[in-house]
Image 1 (cartoon, rainbow, N blue to C red):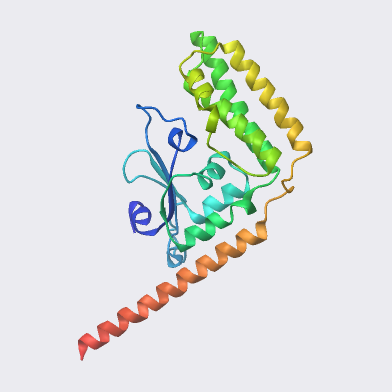
Image 2 (cartoon, rainbow, N blue to C red):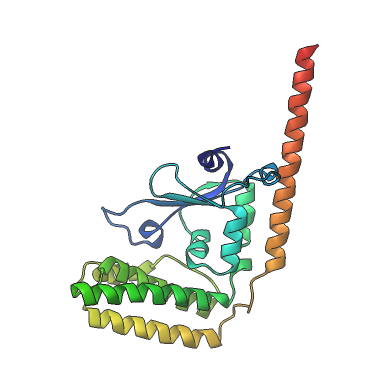
Length: 244
């Protein structure tokens, strides 16, 4: 089975991410699509395993196989957690609905470390831009502020909200370069400090609910195997009937 066929025929959840999901889209914004596909269980029984992720079909589309997606979500990968909380869902089946119902099981204090590491990596890139060109890439600065805000609020409330809501105008002003780099740096520092303070009183558990996620994955794989077996029996029955 071709990788793109897995996305086309076995996607359980697909959504729009990026600026459109964050409430920061403008006329020139791309439409970034992300998804999760469930590779049929028998594909894992041979030497050649199905891919853990697939780019495409089409531009700006990226999908993960369910197991890989769950692994990354349990590690509190920011991109994965935000994908689970997109308000712009384009495709969803029963398995996808069960995945979304597990959103809370993936959230834990691990988010503090994962979001912080990601933010620091992005900050280093911005600092390099300033040293090389005298100014940051303002779009990237905007998205880093959004990420820091999201991380702080997640730790404060125990819930992940990716839309910027009433803060849209303020974030877009940063994207247009209307806010000085010194002010952006000050906001980043303040948000980082607020995130550290939020960690000490967060309602999030220390660890995600591994057992609940593992049970979901096991049941999903088993259902896929049984369905494939049933389909095979039906096809055999049809073939035998045709031979009579």
